[in-house]
Amino acid sequence: MENNKDNKPAKGVWRGPEHLANRKGRPPGTKNKKTEAIRGAYQNLVEMNLNEMSQWMRTIAADDPAKAMDLMIKLSEYVIPRLARTELTGKDGDDLFKDMKFEFGPSVSDRLDSLDEIEDIEIDE
Image 1 (cartoon, rainbow, N blue to C red):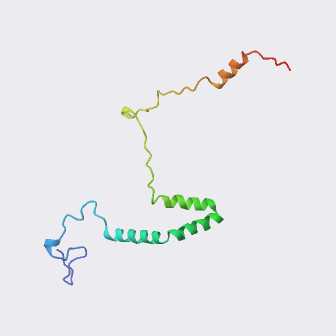
Image 2 (cartoon, helix red, strand yellow):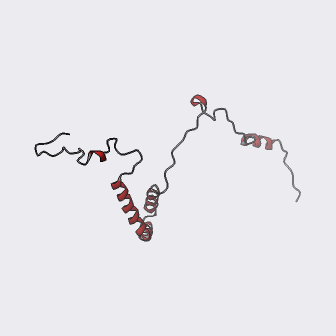
Image 3 (tube, rainbow, N blue to C red):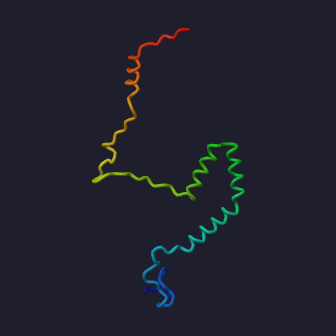
């Protein structure tokens, strides 16, 4: 342990009893206490102001509906996680749909050509 001229441990050095020192650091997945406290306070603030937030959104929408919609989308990202884009590929990265063909029946031009073959029907009035 390094000491400075005032005979105090250097900043960042453990000052407590050695048997309580965590030499491996914080275990993976352990939440930061300050971050959790801030998140809890923010969640509490939002929950206590839900009615006001609805009124604020109505006020914004009355003047600028596009801005209100933009705010709703931005806020929703904190509640509903964005979906990651995924790309489907075949073996060795090949395109899965390269050999796929869709047939929806004859083309419009073929159908129009077939109508030309029909003789005009005369209607007696």
